[in-house]
Amino acid sequence: MKLFLSKLHYDTEPNIYKRILISILEILSIPYGAVVAIRNFLYDKEILKSYNAKATTISVGNLTTGGVGKTPFTAALANFYTEKFHKVAIISRGYGGEISNKEVNVISDGKKIYFSAREAGDEPVWLSENCKSTIVLTCSSRSKAAEYAVRM
Image (cartoon, rainbow, N blue to C red; front, top):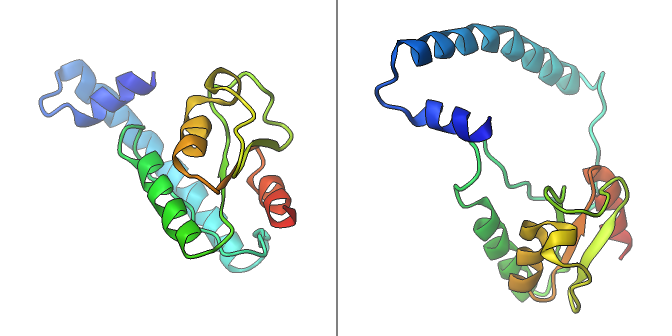
């Protein structure tokens, strides 16, 4: 599905069926946008509470599918700040890994890598291998992982 949607997004000459699907998705995006706007408003008015990691946080992401360079950019940021003698931790959800991400997993403590790509997911292991002295954690809860990282 992800590959199909990515191809649909970048198709410069969609056929009639793809145009119909695009129109349906555009219509569905209206209520989705309204829900996001309401959610943002509730955060702005502090009705919904945001999480404070008690550490400087940089979030790397975008709205498109994979393959746009987020992981190498994350590695470059981590290496830059590690060289400036800052303690750096990377938090990933650990997609594709076999270990449960319900609890915090220390993929690397900055010295040793504890899991294989099969176990932890290829992205966290690649980051561990390419970001020496950087802590790499996986967890489905970013706030739980951030709290863990701050205590390390």
